[in-house]
Image 1 (tube, helix red, strand yellow):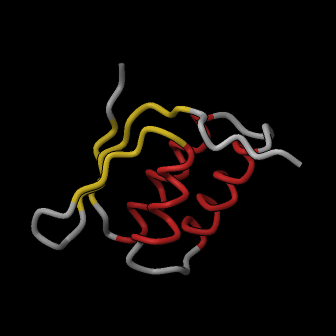
Image 2 (image 1 turned 90 degrees about the vertical axis):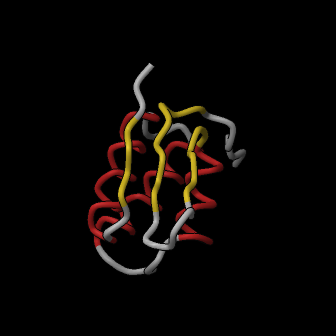
Length: 87
């Protein structure tokens, strides 16, 4: 199975509680990296849904819009401020 990690998403800016700590997510790869390496906690229903959404986008079973929504819900659950940028 080939994974497509280059799929673009409408930008999401994550603002963590640590001063000056921000991430800009533009691709499914950046989203997955943020969830796995940068997320403040690795539990919670919305966190797990966002991780699953990343995998689903990579294999073509979900849209980038679904992933973006999952990330916004996971950020809310984790207390991470998220700014959704629309083009």
